[in-house]
Image (cartoon, rainbow over all chains, first blue to last red; front, side, top):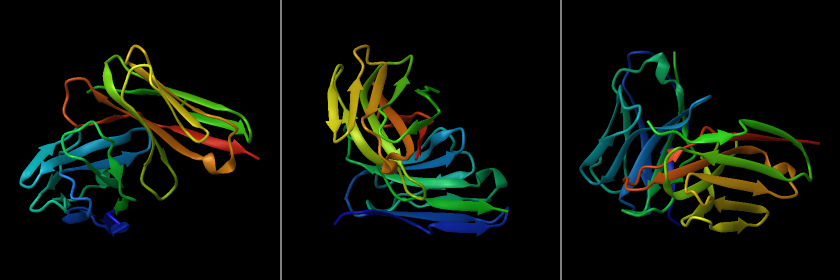
Length: 113
Length: 112
């Protein structure tokens, strides 16, 4: 069965470190998204991609980067982790170029001390 | 940026009661989505709506795409304990790309 998986599920790190969160989907969908979820803010879009080599900034992209070297993966990198980036991070995929819903992974809980 | 106003923020109801929540915006949407999120999991799609006035059911859940295209409603009938969670509305605006905007969620609590 096709699926979307995020790893790790939990991570604790220190401020200033580089952190990479993985997202892997086997749906062969072009559209992939990264969100962060914080109390009082709901889901906020960080970065998104509409296909290989395509990346775009979302609402809260500062301090984050993504790369898309293949269809299956969209890793999210925090270049220099800050305590304000402590959050739960969700990856989502969507059928290309449609008004179809996004479908989410189970999230990564990231704590930055 | 654009916002979706979702209400109420939280609800405490008795098991067996019906639940209503809604989402409004000042902008026009061409797609409305309703998700449910349980602890430790990602949001799961419940219902998708694509036409103004559309009424769609999924078991005890019913959602409607408002006639003005600026709002949507979700109703849950005869609530049960497993309905507990956070319900999110989401919408895709007219003439925009595939990005979806999310409401801040309605947290549903069910009292025994």
